[in-house]
Image (cartoon, rainbow, N blue to C red; front, side, top):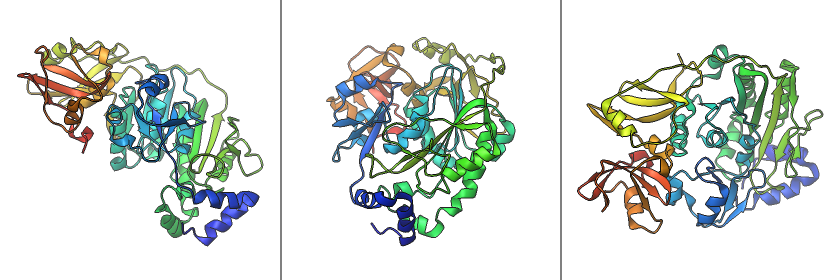
Length: 444
């Protein structure tokens, strides 16, 4: 790996007598890992059915390394949303963000959605997640990942944080800021980042990081928690950003959440910051700081909104669904029907890619259920289900978007599952199932 001399000089100053160990680690192949979607399947249940050789990621209870020659991204369980493929160190920020009942949470720089899916798996019906990224094209990946994970209590948005800060001042209970950075911690996994570092260095990101962090700080409630993270080693992008925030708001306190595999921060007073180094852990480089803002307030929230929507074919379809949806309401926007959580969030003048759960589409007088709804259901929450075994040849055919054979009772809609986990809907016609798996979720 052709690392720049000025970068190596900075790392030698940072690591001192650990520098040679770092260089040695950089010659080793990066490890691969996945994070189990515990909103769909428990860790224990997944380990029983897993076809992969797994070993635990110490700082993430549902994170696991898998074998070098294994390809979980092509397995049907991936298409069912049972796990997310994520680098092990990148699991740390969301695992360190506390989520309590009633919390409204912002993932400020969310794309492509790894941390948002991790936060969502920790939530219940009393929580609301606002997943934002300024890049709408990158947020499309977040939307797809959140749908596959079956997330319902979320808004997927794409807007500028400075603009949001004016609208949502002191609004969020928890905020995760995985800031754009120079990417030094990912050089081993993605060597293409080295050229970007040569062109920009770390200084180019500092002003952006300050602006993002300050905007998020102003949106954080009194008593709220903010996690700031990067995948870089630069003190300018890490500890000095935290120092800057604490100077701007003296009520901020660094929370000590150290575990044995985390190093301390590198500046005086910043010891409670956490660093992950590739020569000390099985993973890439990362920086995480957990900040609390003042004392918790008990401000009242606005009362829930009451709206409803009815359509004959939609109502008829919903007789087949037993998913609890009493903590929200239905709303029709153009030809789409959405279930929205009964948690107040003013999304006016904000670019929204998805709000709540997309139930499906009205096509003239017909209702057609969405892929998002299929992923949000459990197999017990729909009354007509086809359970396919992992060895059934119809699994691969269905994932490719093909029609599959069926000998069961004639009902219009059927939920196709791999084992007990939904893949998507189909429509029964003459002892076949017409494939309704949306194209973006098919196996290429």
